[in-house]
Length: 121
Image (cartoon, rainbow, N blue to C red):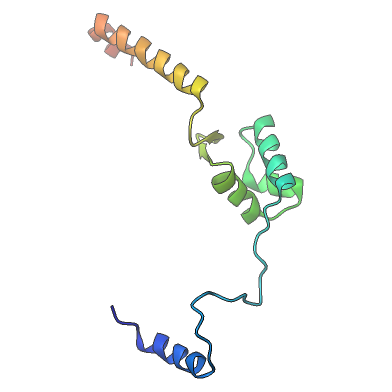
């Protein structure tokens, strides 16, 4: 695999000055988003209190950036927005059991009364 001309052009001065590290260095500018435990707990408890709350509203309430709230919800809490409600991406054991019971009940209705069940839809 070959590197582009511009990449090699950037490497040459660095190699001439003895800089052989392949790790990224700190860059000036915007600071990284800091996800502190207090913010994670606050976002999580806010969502548990109202699952239909918007990420923008959480950011305004907690006075943290929208990007930080989004990161906490999607990456740390592992949740997603389904039908305007925040739900965990992975179901817990109770939720899986509830889904199983509901699915079995629907299948049972469909087995015994296929024509009548489909007509209700």
